[in-house]
Image (cartoon, rainbow, N blue to C red; front, side, top):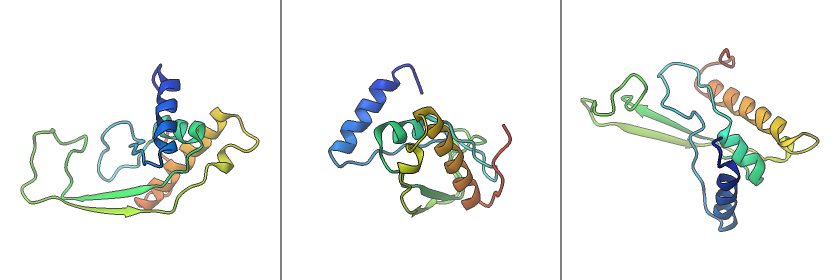
Amino acid sequence: MNDDSADVIAAAEQVFAKGQTLIIFPEGTRTQPSQPVQLKRGAAHVAVRADADVTPVLIECNPTTLTKSDSWYQVPERRVHFNIEVKRPIAMAPYQTDVTPSKGVRMLTRDLTRFFNKESGFNEQPAR
């Protein structure tokens, strides 16, 4: 998280208090197709600190576009189609019970990384 993490958490809490949704891309950058993802801790930090359940969403793009290997101005030759799959929410309670917030954040980041990699066909967590 950046230096203004308390402000980010407060803003997220306001969004959740209004019953709104906050979308966060936990990769922190564009990903490489056919490669395991490695998530940053920011999304987990917001979820744990704001006590907000996480709803994972899988986004498949065909043909791929806007990846690390594509320049932003490269337009695919055919129309891009997105398949968006909303998964079951993940409760924050296990990440807050008997653990420090920072440990809960690390645990959630690990679990989300494993989840997204498994859903993408990768069984192991990427090497660090």
